[in-house]
Structure formats: structure tokens, C-alpha cells
Length: 100
Image (cartoon, rainbow, N blue to C red):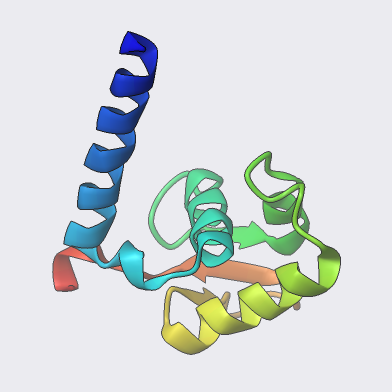
């Protein structure tokens, strides 16, 4: 039982942190794709390829069509943008939690 309590406390803390910076308005799939893109970015402004995001462990279980709809949604909400000067399927994480 103690393990379950610890897991609950961690999840509750994570939920609060996500809410504090505005990630709570994303669906679970949107959040996973966004967090995978962020994890694959070495520094702010670096582009990440769609295939890299797609192969991240947070995203591997998502259906292909859902993945592409989610990328489109994140682009529309301003969490991602297409990388300038590169070919298609390159994205930049542009969400700034301090601006939320």
C-alpha cells in the first residue's frame, strides 16, 4: 500500500506542476507528443524531426493517424512550429511556460 501512496503523491505533484505551467489544457496524447519533442531538443530553438518524435517511448504506442492529428493540433495551439529554413517534418518547441 505504501508504494501506491507514493505513486499517487508523485502523480498529484506532476499534475500540479503541469497545471502551473499550462500543460493541463493538453490531452494526454498531446502532452506525450509535446514532452517527447521537448526531450529530444538539445537546446531551445533546435529543430526536431517528426521521425525522432515518433520513435520516442512516450509516443510509440500512438496510432499513426492520431500522431499526425496531434502534431497538427500542437502546431495550431502554438506549442510547436515548423522549423524555418528546413524541409518538412522538422519542428521547433516554442512553448514558453514562463509566458503562461
